[in-house]
Image (cartoon, rainbow, N blue to C red; front, side, top):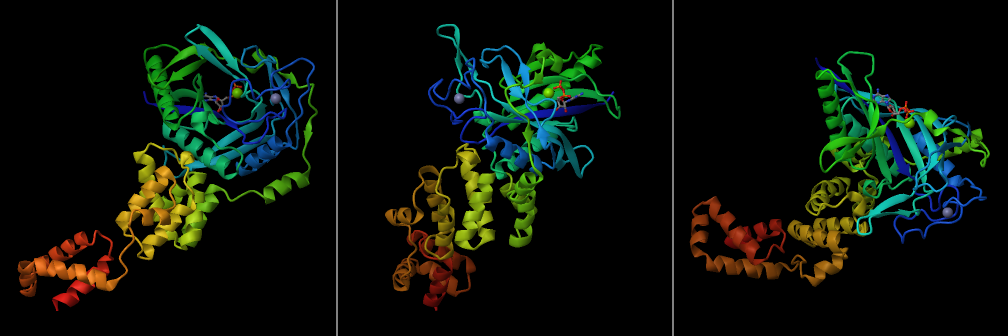
Length: 477
Ligand code: ADP
Ligand code: MG
Ligand code: ZN
């Protein structure tokens, strides 16, 4: 029997507001344990939460960017569970009236070709929990509440995803949209974007979903891909062996490439949800929503279309550059400086991608001054440095954030602009290679190339090739 994979994702994204969702503590990542905390986010009795307006604004912005309806009257609910990473013993979340509903994201259809929409069931606001750290040395578990109360959006998809590739593309698209909206940095290795992956399988063509399992908190594209594939395979094997898939929560271990059962899946009723009594409902006016709609930044799809029509980028390049906010902003800065979109794209797709790859750096960790790329391109296009030198300069820019012009001077990389000096070097080459000169005069093209090569080497690549060719021709008569 042939099976098909069914997958739905619950993506959590940490919002990049300055302060937490219900108090004034910083949301900054890291810091000494338990220093970004106050009586509210550490769950002291008698304290009251106050909603951070920015969180609501970011949620609405995200919802509109993801084609959702905005629930203009929405509420918080209390999700009760006891676990030491959440000192209140409940999480403030939204169940009955989430702030956004019924959106979609478009991705490539990996089964039938063309495009398809992954529907978004809802987006709700909630608070993040703290972090438990197991200390092997003392065999104890420590808790860090710095992350407690960091605002989260949970974006819940419908089970419209049909393969590991689609799951990855869906999260990539989400990430780009969230980044371009400016609501999250989406750093997956810091946990600002993480996915709960629900997977089931059913016979091909069936319309009855199989039993699903859920793998929580997966935080890399590779792990999402591997988890969907491995879990679908595991379920198919169970069914083929005449066994049943049990609905459960599993932990994905990406280093081992397998998952194991954590617990049987909990239902909403297990959490004894009830309306949060400490917070009033949120009412959003038409004007408020309209204003956010009117001020949405340019989103990845629109940007991509514009790069193609306005700058004549290829679809492939435009797609790549719009895949993360870092490439897009570097590209735009570079175009501003060079006035040359083609070269700007070319250097990003070539040199920058290679540097990222060689150093295993993520785009969000590029830390050089953005102007530098455009400045290097200008140096090449104005014949101030060779294309080869540009590679060296860019490497230094990328690794050490050097200023291109200074670096070129310090390392004596400027092209020779003095024609008589270039001429002098070529004359020396001619004098030293009488045989090649003779052969050239008898019509041997190869010898000319040999002389060019020798001249360029003597000039250390610091004279424009066209100029060297022209001068050599003249000098040979
Ligand atoms: P719960 O209330 O138990 O969390 P939901 O209906 O909210 O369940 O679904 C949670 C996630 O699981 C959603 O992203 C949804 O798309 C996905 N999902 C639901 N049913 C299936 C299924 N049969 N196979 C794969 N994913 C599913
Ligand atoms: Mg759920
Ligand atoms: Zn606090």
